[in-house]
Image 1 (spheres, rainbow, N blue to C red):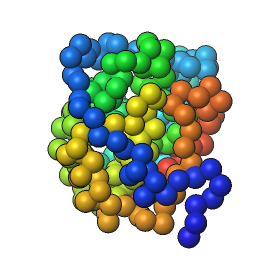
Image 2: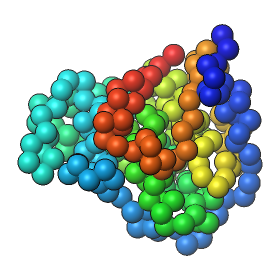
Image 3: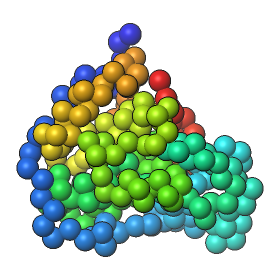
Image 4: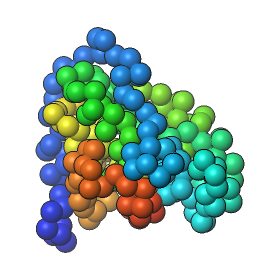
Amino acid sequence: MSPAPGEVTLAQLLSMLTTQPENRIGYDRALFAHWIDADGDGCDTRKEVLIGESRIAVTVGPNCSLSGGSWLSSYDDVPFTDPSGLDIDHMVPLAEAWDSGAWSWSAATRQAFANDIGVGWSLIAVSASSNRAKSDQDPADWLPPEADAWCGYLGDWLPAGATRPTRRSASRRLRRTLIAARSAIDSSRSWHLIPTGSTATTTGSVARAVSAARPRGP
């Protein structure tokens, strides 16, 4: 099946990842300002992701307090009704982004990357334990403990990794890993790529719609 206009295939995504040396010098997580309230609706990026990924409607109260939600951490298949047990994971870790070119980005670009809710694959609500086990590792060093999540995880990591501003770089080992793992990704899937931080796609309503539609597997 051919991709729709404006979409790219798995092979095209893989071809976008060039190999370049990584650079961790000067990295500080604080250089990626998050979480922010990009659209001024009172809910910051973390809350927007939680609202978007709840499996049932969430009640949003004063100061964006959330109640009544239900979440499933796809990394380890653990359900949650209390969002305090969830972390918001950057699909491409901030340190990995720094290694691959974010050291040269402007502060505004780093902030946009760290809070990118314009597409469904950049940020994901997962159990705190699985997020901290992943830490700053890329798919060459870490995959979700739930094997059924590998397809969705790799399918989300690829567009997040291939569409970073300024560079689309990866270590040689990571690129080899992704190419070797391509059989685990649904080859019929295609992606509509939106530039990180696009102001047309960072409102809460769009984030909720896109996140709700995120594929979770083949």
